[in-house]
Length: 211
Image 1 (cartoon, helix red, strand yellow):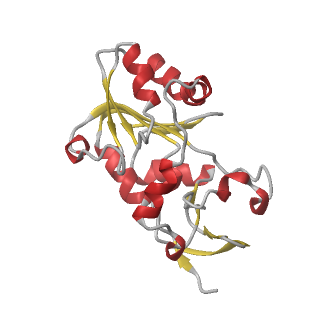
Image 2: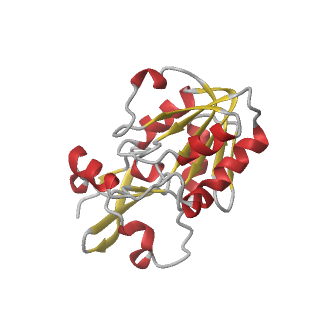
């Protein structure tokens, strides 16, 4: 197979996983792991896939899943700050939980709450929960997220970072066909330097970029 160009840093990548339905490349520069573009779902199929997710905002398990982001925002910001839930999906539970605590938060989702003017504003904090692994154009998306943060603003992300915790061929997280870009710790540090975030903190459950 010929080398692929990384959609994040545009360096050369070579084959990393050839399991049926799960062809992935790994980038030499940023160490991102990604599916080739020809395997991506089209927008209609992608939306139908997300509509199958049972994201009930009142589900206790779902609330617990997003709680690391909610707790971090509550620790770092007051109710005088405003936020955006980017990629809020069919069940914007982060917005619900923060709103109940008195925070001002709006949603944006390409498929379910596509309100472009919300992408032209700036925010003190942005949540991005289980979204970044779906980015078809990750550098463009992170540049947008960076531009929407006020100085000293923070971007709270949740995704599964690959740390060789299991052979990649057997790793459950790659099995979702809409997970097209997988991040390693080196990839996150590359992003931090490229976009000139002050720092990136890679915690157990979340990733926090500070502008």
